Image (cartoon, rainbow, N blue to C red; front, side):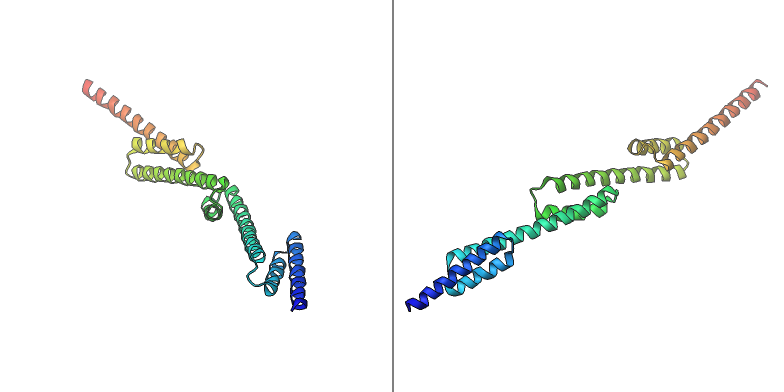
Length: 188
């Protein structure tokens, strides 16, 4: 029995030694294998059970970190290409993995601000188009100018404002001609 116990202890010690060696070399799967092997010689051994749990936790952390970094890289690429809606989901997933990380939270906030600004711009431009079609030119111009405050170099909006200025100029010219004719008619 003592020989059998000594053999078990020797095998246990060898398994633990190999497990720690594999752990130091970052071969985590092999380290778990050797700790589980040690458990066959000493079932319920707290050292082996604790180490297996620690290694599994570490492996999960590493897997999460790898996934997080891949998501951030994907999101950053989309963000830099100004594809904000495409970037939003990976940032949100990355933030779900590591909620304390500031970068994805900051980027999500930036994207939401950008998308909100874009929505406001498009809403103003759309309302201005409707009012323009109704020939309410001063009101339309005011809406286009508000949209221009968001995107100061938007060619469509600049073109519409120039078009409205031309129309208003022609209307004013016609009103002046009309008033002159009425004035002449009244004198005559």
